[in-house]
Amino acid sequence: MAADTQTPVLRFDHVSVAFDDTPALIDVSFQAYKGESRVITGATGSGKTVLLKTALGLQRPDSGTVYVFGKDISRMRERELFEIRSKMGMLFQESALFDSLNVEENVSYPLLNQLSIHCPPDEVLPRVEQALKFVDLEGILEKFPSELSGGMRRRAAIARAVVTQPPLLLYDSPTAGLDPITANTIVALIVKERDLNKTTTLIVTYRYQDGNLVANFRYNPDNGGLVPAANHGGLAPRTLFMVLREGRLVFEGPQTELEASQDPYISKFVKQRG
Amino acid sequence: MFDFLKEPFIAIQEFYLLTGRALRNVVARPHYGDDILAQMDLIGVGSLPIVILTGLFAGAVMALQMSRALQQYGQVDQTGTLVSISLVRELGPVLTALMMAGRNSSGIASELGSMKVTEQIDAMRALGTDPIQKLVTPRMVATAVMLPLLTILSDFIGMFGGWFVSRFFLDLPSRQYWSSVWRVLEWNDITQGLLKPFVFAFIISLVGCYYGLRTSGGTQGVGRATTQSMVAASVIILVVDFFLGKIFVSQGGS
Image (cartoon, rainbow over the protein chains, first blue to last red):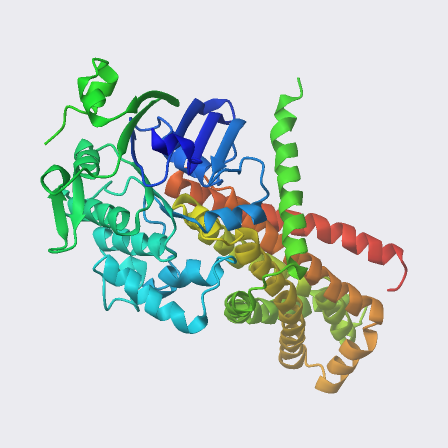
């Protein structure tokens, strides 16, 4: 495969992470290439969030190595990590917007604080507005996160993650705690970001529908919605599914293999297809 | 065998690491001047009412109680001396610091604790800022600047409280009270009275930050961190106060 000759955007090499004596990730290895989508699923406490945090260098592996854009980040110092992190966007589970800052300050935060992003001061506001427009949130610059609904908070957080246009995006449970309609609009935004900016995307989710949308649909710029990729010339970008169980990577492969799996734990996450 | 010692030792080590990083960041770039000013306003100006009230009544109570002891020696006119020394050397710094511990250590711990449990601290790191640089150092610098100033204020207000009692309850002439307040003070008292709040400022801010940043376990954890930080800061202040007092007394000077 052509992609194999490139450097993987994200590579885990026998990574283990433990908190005190409780293992959170055990010997996880995988490689994600440019433009790929990864849907990571698994039960609560199976290490999905830890995996994303390890990829971002927020959590150091106890053993093994993490490579981001070909660079070993597992032994990097925090200051060097800032450089790498400016090429990654992360959506945290509960949005993690800064309570003390309003939406404008939240979204402009990475532009102003990431040292390797030299954003001229007069370009900050236009870029913030552009990012908010991308997530269909306009005219709420002055609002504080506590004044927003759950779905709006999630969208503002996506705006903050994509405002620097990073080539690698990590989404931690983007649809958790949202109603099905809002959840679908959030996934649509993720697909839109992926298809317009050709980003490598990792999505942690326990909703199989989310993975299904990501794997089989693509953004339609004509009407701003999602369309089945198969009907519209070609496939959606390569999407692989990963299933974690108690810190171990028990499945990695395309959707067809996932659906064909006989493993009771794995098929539990497929059953709910709607 | 000594497993029970592991936790306190790790805690002390982590606290020292935090202190070291926070201090190093005072000179390291980038500087967050706006955050320092905002914290000065929050920690310093925000604490004015509580500092004024405690100072006033501490001074008044000192005058009231000391006059009772001085009466036995027929020295009630020396009330100002006692009020002045005890305020400047001891009560001003310690009471102000304890009030600040109650108000600000716990405030800092709950703020940083909530940020920790909602992943805002992680988000901060993910978005390219060092939380110690952005959150801890500004709070430490702001407290270190504001606490000595608040202590000076508290000392003066306390003296005023002492004057009120001396003048209206003990019938001492104002001039006598103020001259005894002024004459008894030596440089040693002043240095001690200003060095203490400077040291306490680090305890108040860093203990608050330490407990805030190591918060875990959701909102319940935030509550626990808040309480623990206040208790720890108060106890450490009183212990350190004793040793500082001991050093100054043994170095001579009244």
